[in-house]
Length: 140
View 1 (spheres, one colour):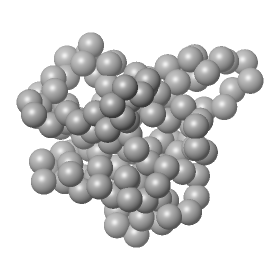
View 2: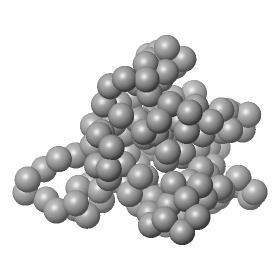
View 3: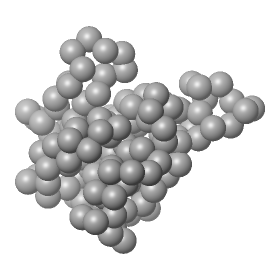
View 4: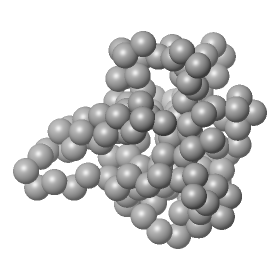
């Protein structure tokens, strides 16, 4: 199993990028596995969620809450029983969430830094990050 972690500070757009990623995947032939989707945020926009998507024989879990260790571990732990090929998550740039990923998944973690490009607005950055992650998923 490979972990792709979008890494950035609190409120940097990680969850927004992963919401866009889910939409991109659904629009590119992935389907949601029934009864896996959980919206953690109620009415928050964009919502923190957990889901499992499949295309052909590839399964990809996505869990967005990653700023605190408890949320990150619960999201990943809930996806592991499905045996996904890839789990995409969010994490901070350092500290407990990164330590957890390094300790438990080691070299299986691919970190993608949250884009901060002065030539782009937040929406453009989030779209670009989502496309980068989707491209990475296709190569695994």
